[in-house]
Length: 272
Image (cartoon, rainbow, N blue to C red; front, top):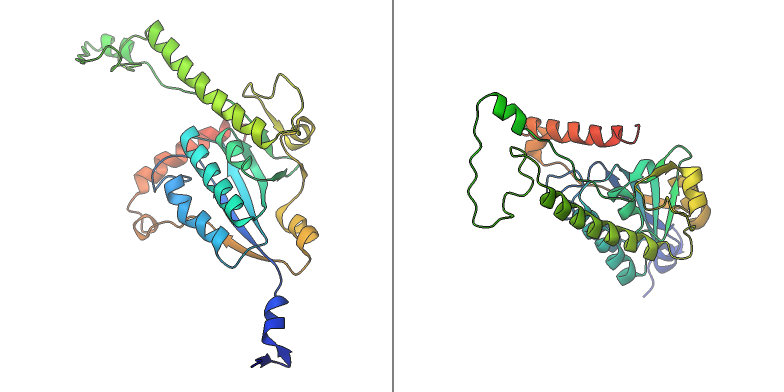
């Protein structure tokens, strides 16, 4: 039996549906936990749904992130790649203000990366920052008392003088993470990267220079690029993390405010 709607065979009508591109918005700092702006736990249902719902022709990542946790960056990127390979769906990344550090780590999960001319791209490096307050405590007559069962348990205690062996141990850890980041970029951008010593120093560039270095594939925006590939009738199905009702009603104003300050500082480091 054949079903007809408006004189058209239903099967033919389904076949003539315009292609769909699933769009995942990745905005903000990358941090652990379901309440983090961008985390694997928080994004997992969003990413899974984008790849699985309605057989999309492609998945587009809209990225605006100064970076954050290398672990979360790796987990998010790995999830995107696993689903892309499993579903046979191409992935395109489109950079807004920045895809820096962990933001670029995630961008490299895409098969192709595009940016606006004024986007900032790169910062392939690892950073650890903190404060030392032992002098202030000493001036106030406050004595710090720490008891451990292992000599490294109080490593980099901000209330004690910095120790050379702790700094050396931290730098070794950061270097190992940097190697993992570098391996990810060189693997995903194989055959595209230029031989340039500055690539993995933590430096960042505007899109034009980033394209010359092979960090991105071109200057382009989401809608026109997807229309060029999939036709003017392409439809966009947008996905993004949703805030819980407690957050929307102001139950986490302090926490969100502190996160906003941290994110603002991260973007400021890029001159944004």
